[in-house]
Image (tube, rainbow, N blue to C red; front, side, top):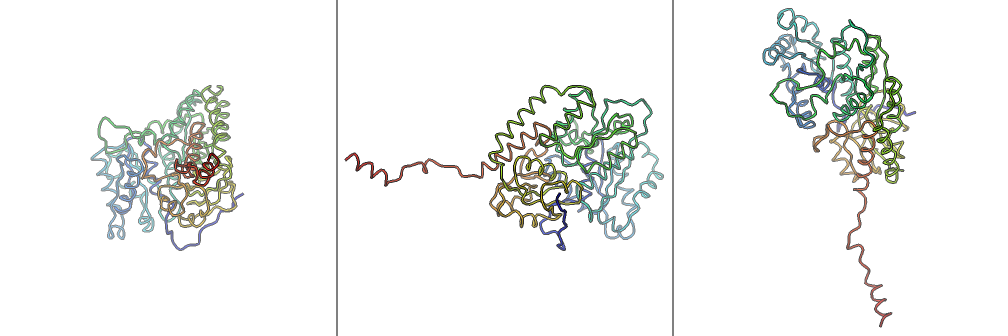
Length: 453
């Protein structure tokens, strides 16, 4: 069992983590016809928007209450009311989702009260859901903001069941460590067992890089408000990632449905457990294509172990991503030589290492010397260059490569592709002989000439 330790530095030198409001805003982007707002200064929103634009290479709907120094001291009601009404007037969204920031949390704004008063003053907002989430910058990390927002979305929108339960309907709560491609793969797997998954939130509908027919200032896809409200009749709550435990357990208790939580879906054993559970729940056998994909994964593990066996790896990532990647690499024979994460989580104790540090990229670099592979987000590229080791980008943001949202690392196919990525990164960094290294040296040639003389 790993020991989780906090770095004792006064500040982050080379930050690994991102803040809670950014995670909360991304969760809102997985809902259809929605406008996320950060209740804070314009800079809080600008930095978050730039980060998402560079990662997804898409236009990002994100607004701000534009708090100034004076508004922060006197209270932000007027800014909140003006922001909500401007958005409503211009785009009529179904949902306006608001996340707090460190600025307004420190001031202590009563945003729930502000939104209640705004509704009273503007009855035309009756058909627009206003969802507020407390996501202070100064504690937690990206996945904490995501988890808190998903929980709040469910608490506000899910209605008590008014119709008979539908066992085939599955409420799926994915963690923020899953990519768009992961969500599409998970939906396809569930549908192959005859189930009807409703993902909350669903970034595969809004940030999958498709070209919309018309311009929309709000999100251009994702889970609709009506579908979330109807989850009261779902037959099962299925969550992926320890970060979703609180939301899954709340929803299961609220609608009186069973709850199944998978801490990871990367790797042979983890995917086997998903397939066995779905076969048991649906009463259907595992489809032939997944048996074929499982065989391909086993073959990839056989091919890849020549390169991954004994490989020392340094990983810096959010807890659920670190847990999934770290456990699978350990199963492939890798040694987790350095593991640094952003926030506390129960899954960290289950990593096959002596210590997990909650720190920054500077801490990771100090521990990664002598490693064979570095895995973290794109901000680790200079570190990899200094350490002269291969670098595999994982997590968010990845701004210096295309297709980050479409990388698959879930299920049998995703696990197979991940093995190839790791092995190829190690192969590419190894020595490749060139034709000039194959020439016979002068001395033997001279000796051979003498022998024929």
